Image (cartoon, rainbow, N blue to C red; front, side):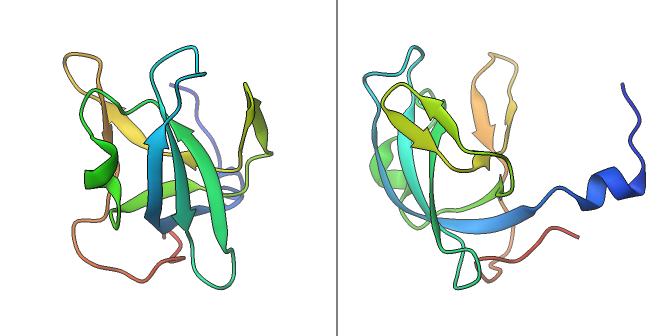
Length: 112
């Protein structure tokens, strides 16, 4: 495991967002969804591609709070421009479970 110092950690903008739209992304090399995520007034709405199709259906993602990195450079994924990185953890089967707050918090809240 590589160590980082506090200054490295403070550069990462991990924020809570609310998924406002989720749809299949059939052009992706690996099964994925296109997500629209609202991070509140300061950051706004950002797009992301997420390989979470094994554990989630698009309709159940709407209104779900998620934790995402919002200050990575944009990344072109096929015809789609991803603007943030939704975080998650691999389970024992290798499927991605989203990293989510366990209590309601305002969108845009920064991880401390």
